[in-house]
Image 1 (cartoon, rainbow, N blue to C red):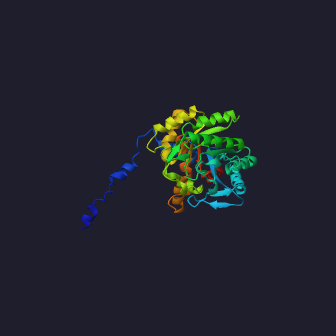
Image 2: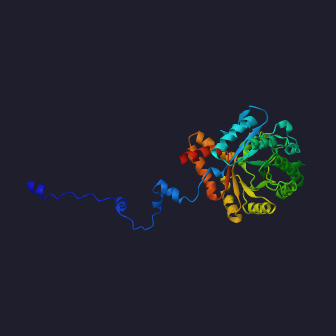
Image 3: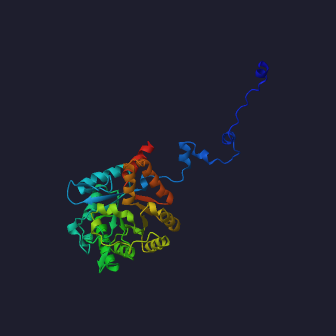
Length: 355
């Protein structure tokens, strides 16, 4: 018995499973891409794209009256504001360093007509908003929407006859609308209606009125999208729209068409172009920038904003992280500026990151 005990062989160490053995071996690698991700300062040095406050455009909705504040239910955090309150809201953007705001007036329903005549009124809500903000913030860029849907009783961007959206007749009204805004002091006109020939007609009219320095940001690549619903809620125009806008806004299936539209608008005198919507059309942003090398803006539209806010409200996503990631995605695609309802919160986050 004792002989057996002393002759017993010591236990052999258990062999490592194949996967653990492989993990202990050093791979013979010269190139290790993870080295440049090892710490924050290196990641900062090698970052290919950056988001800054200079990239942001804040959209705002103005109301008639005084001391009026109306939350937009489908866009948490966004409000319609009367001019006295809008000044304070925009002051926050100015203090944060946001270079420009995009103006969208909420026209009273009683002023909406089939011909959208209020659009060309030199004392309409849009023109009063321009004069108020330019008087308070002379160095802030103001971008004015040139389209008829805030002013028409049928909710379309153009004049309608027998169910058909009229192109040339609409352009005449758009020219008058653009001149009214230019006379009020707008810096950038943003025709967003997709009528053929509108850019050239507006540019000629501006030059004839001695508004050569007024820029045109053409919504050359504007798609007939399902992501616009909350914006129409904000303008109180959603219930007015009869039919859809597919006869003048672009088919989401097309990309080459967007490039043709951009080329036409640049030839007619556009200074910059807008792609709308944003996240579903990053490929369009990239192709426009790579093809034309012109200032390329992108609109993170109301539906994109509402979708993210709904997810973050339910704690499905981290608000701050998805705000910054989506905006950086636009920059990576080639956008020079981003029109976003998250502009103020993004600017605050950028300031915190700078310390």
